[in-house]
Each structure stands twice: as structure tokens, then as C-alpha cells.
Length: 214
Length: 254
Image 1: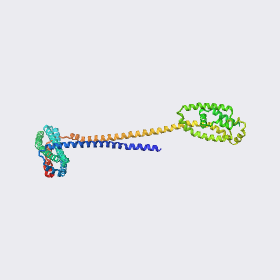
Image 2: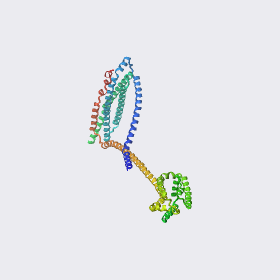
Image 3: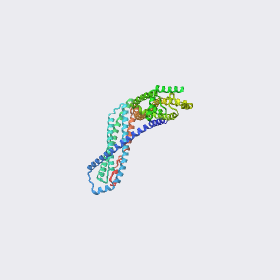
Image 4: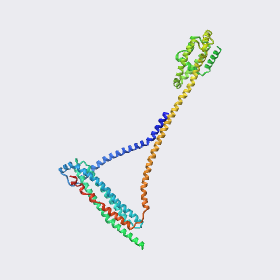
């Protein structure tokens, strides 16, 4: 009788807890794999960061004096904290900028679909949409580079390598300038090319509507 | 006395008619103990010649049977623990019978001996039936013990079968439980996969609805698009988002 009860109880326990156990084992193994991958990624990231900093050093034109290096070594930790804040604000800027540009592209695509439904030639509008997408992607890539340089400058061991720290900041400034140029170019493209094209389409739609009324 | 003789005849007849196994065990115990029943009984009262011949036959049959048993090594360990208890009982009974035999000799020799008749009569006056029955039991107990032996062998084998059945049942139960658990895990994982598939389907469906609800564009749609784009472009402030002062040397304190 006790054996039957024991067998029934053990079977119930196995039946009830084995799915969770299997899931826990799977989660543990997945977490272990993720941890190993993250450690490997960290190692590779550190190596890549060193390589990037060396590249920044090569691109720098002005050489630091020993006094400048010592000054940077003394106060760079505070500067790195400020750079981290800038990096955080840039992340928010990137998200907002991508959302706004994506909304412009979606509105143009919706209009293109409706124009096709109205039997309007949308070839030029589709080309504009593709060009705008390409410019947006390019600017997002520029933002990624800008964020990368900000991260490098905030993580590099500035006390040991003040030259690398300064070179990283200079690279971030260059990237920011590039992004700003891209953003101005996109705004110009939209206000000039897209708005002009949409005006032409509006005029054609007005003519067709007047013709259909007559 | 006639009854005794009949009992004796029955006893002898039963011993003769009994299979070798029943007699063998009794003789084996006698040999093992080193006490030869014939001579011991002879010490008390001389056995008749014909019965000695019968004993020799029995002993020969016993020897052959013992050889067979000793040759058959597999059966001996199984029978030993079972025969111990009856052997002990037989020893007790033998002791009792020997003590009784001290008063009265073996039942077989009673009719042929003339001198101990009064003793036998004295003893038979009160204990005739027990003595008549006890030798039967002494001869019959081995026969009866063989049947319990076979029964006990079967009983020993039957519990093993039951145990095997229990073990088998436990193993089957555990296997079934594991299978059910595996099935539960599989169902759980597949259900999660179905949930993600349905989620993707639901995300895809709105696009299809949009495509289905498309209406031809009008100039108002173009105007609305132009207005939205202008507002969006105006909301983008490069000077605030990409300020040069944010990472200047002065700001960073360099």
C-alpha cells in the first residue's frame, strides 16, 4: 500500500515538475550560452576599441604637449562622465530623428499607393521615396558612428592614454559635423525636391478632377 | 497388539511405498548426526534380521538418492534452508520419541520382541495412540515436508514474481510519467510557437486591411501630406540635437 502511494506520488512529482525542470535546464543552458557569447563579444569589442583608438590617433593632426597630456590625465574622468551624458542624449536624438524621417517616408508611401489607385504616374515619387530612404539610412549610420566615437572616448583609459582620449573626442566631433551636414541635406532635399514633386502631383490631380467634372 | 502390528505394517508399508525422497531426508539427518537409527534402537532392543535387510535396502536407495542429490548441486542450496526447520522439528520429535523409546522401543520391533511386551503394554495403556501416530509422523513428516518444500519453493518463486511485477509496474509508471512530461513540454513549446505565429499574423493583418481599404488619392490628400512633412521637418532641430558645444573642450573641461 505504501509502495503504491510512493509510486503514485513520485509519478505525480515527475509529471508535475519535469516540464519546469526541463524549461529551467533549457533556460540555464541558454543563459550560459548567452554569457559565453557576451564574454567573447566583450573581448572582441575591447580589441576592436583599441584598434579604433589607434586609428583616431592617426587621424589627429595636432600633437599634444606633455603638459596637455598631464592635464587631460588629471581631469579626463570628469570629462568622460559628461561624454556619457552626451551619449545618452544622442541616443534619444537618434530615436526621435529616425521616427520623424520614417514617418515622412510612410506618408509618402501611403500617398503613392493612393495615387496609383487614382491612376497617377508615381514613378518620380517612388524614386524620391527611395532616395529619401537611402539618405535616412546613411544618416542613421552616421549617428551610429557618432555614438561609437562617444562611447570610445568615454570608455578609453584616459589616464593611461590621454592622446587616445583626445583623439576619440576629435573623431566624435568630426562625426557630429558629418551628421549635421547629412541632416541639413535631407531637410533641403525634402523641402525642395519632395515638396516640388508633390505640388506637381497636386496640380495634375486638380486637372483630372476638373476634366472629369466637365 | 494387532492394531499395533497393523500400524507397524502401515508404517513399514508407508515407508516402503513412500518415495525415496521422504525416506532419504530422514536417513540423511540420521547420518549427519552420526547416530545410526538401527544400532541405537538395537541398543535398546535388538532389531530383527529381516528389518535390517529392509534398512539395508533403504540405505542403498538412500545412498543412491544422496549421490543424485549431491550430484545435482543446484538443488541443494535451495532445499537446505527449507529443510532446516523440519529437521529441527524432527530432532525434537526424535528426542521425544527417543525419550519415549526409552520406555518403549521402536514400534516396528514391538511385535517380534517377546520380552518388552509388558513395558509396551504399560506404555500402550496410556500412550498407544500417540506412539502409533508419532512414528507415522516421523515417517510422514518428511513426505509432508517435501510437499511444503515444493510449496515453499513455489511460494519463494511467487513473491519474486510479485516483486518483479512491482518493479515492472514502477518502471512502467515512471516511463509513462516521463513520456507524459515530455509530451507536456512539447505541447508547451509548440503552444508558444503558435502564439508567436499568431502574433506575427496579427501584425501582418493590419497591413492587409490597409491595402484593402485604399481609396484613390485626391488633391486634399496631397495637401495633407505636404503639411505633415513640413511640420515634421520643422520639428527637426539640428542645432539642439547636434550642438557643437556639447562636446567642446570648454564643456568637457579640457
